[in-house]
Image 1: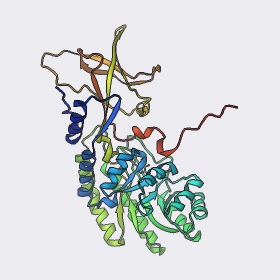
Image 2 (image 1 turned 90 degrees about the horizontal axis):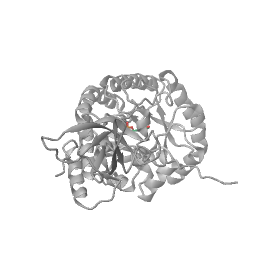
Image 3 (image 1 turned 180 degrees about the vertical axis):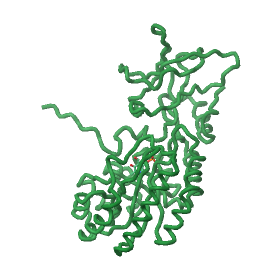
Image 4 (image 1 turned 60 degrees about the vertical axis):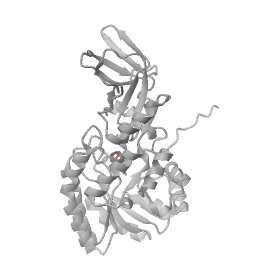
Length: 382
Ligand SMILES: Cc1ncc(COP(=O)(O)O)c(C=O)c1O
């Protein structure tokens, strides 16, 4: 009676198995086979080893998901001490972790150094000074500012060194007894434009030349995340991006003997999970019909308020004669902004107790709680 045909195959199988059982909702069902199936094209199209992939813990910090990626032999990228403590629970060795947040809290640098991490991102001189103080003699990689054209969520306002300042900052790093060893960039979230990736690598090529002239020799280029994964054919788009950039990456590798690494988050996780919830009530108010679910946007889907959209899937086989109507899909809280979507066309037979899926739910949803490893502040009543 279920129909999951709108979802990728491995997730379909995980959902079938789960929904046959008496599961308590709401719950996010995440398919480890789907994660493995997503890693494969990343390795295949970009010619990576699993160890060239540094999974950003911010994307999904569920211990079992991290353990699954560990089994698949990926490495990891963190932004905070909170994220490091998750990797620590699984005893992930420090050599497999990079600290990619360009602006770090000082005691997080100290704790990471104590753990054994020696690879830190930077994009300012003050950050270099912090790293020199709390993680002396470490390696540092420059977060380059690049265009995020085509991204659904740009990241280049908040972070990044302009191309013209990279060499100067790398020299400052050397003066602080740090070891500049790489360049990183991020094209912004869900970026489907191959030219943006390619132009960024073009800038990196110029930088490698300039650094070489200045006798600074790096070990890697980190092409970040941003690979399209949300509401699109991620595999075809990755193929198109790889087709464009692989020759450029190959040339850089050959000329400068460097590693190419990446930090794909959404690509590996987004389509690997769906939230399974149940209809609490179906209510007509004036001329609008509302479906109340037992979980809403305040339970990890706050991104809806920044105009990111999720599919609402009624996971049952639909008869030919079924009639449809348009619904507003809302959550259980008392807030009026708790709305997944309006004008969602679904069968008019929907009733309390039916399952409903919200998809994709593998990236940035369960980790929206304590996002990026930063806890909510406690309240101190005085
Ligand atoms: C430094 C860094 N790397 C990787 C990612 C993951 O990006 P995505 O989910 O687009 O793959 C992010 C996301 O914000 C990031 O900030």
